Image 1: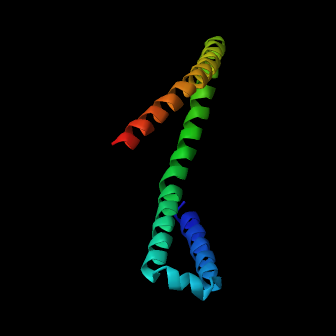
Image 2: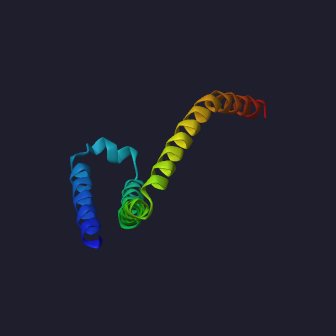
Length: 119
């Protein structure tokens, strides 16, 4: 994973440097060099963190889910079906509730915005 992340980040840094080389002089007149480099550094650091930490975690979680599912089927396939149906029911119920509560969340955010404009 380290080799993949370092190779990917090198490619991204090279592409960003090439893009910076093509920017017009006017852009550099309106933006400080430190500001540009700060954006580049922060963006590549965020990508590096995502590639180095999140992707391996996602892969490990996927393998765990598949392993547990296979173990459940091997242990008791009928109980596995019950669990799958309950999981589907829970997902559908959550989607319905979240959809209906979305309008109340929007109304709450508008009310907060009105309060903030007053002060």
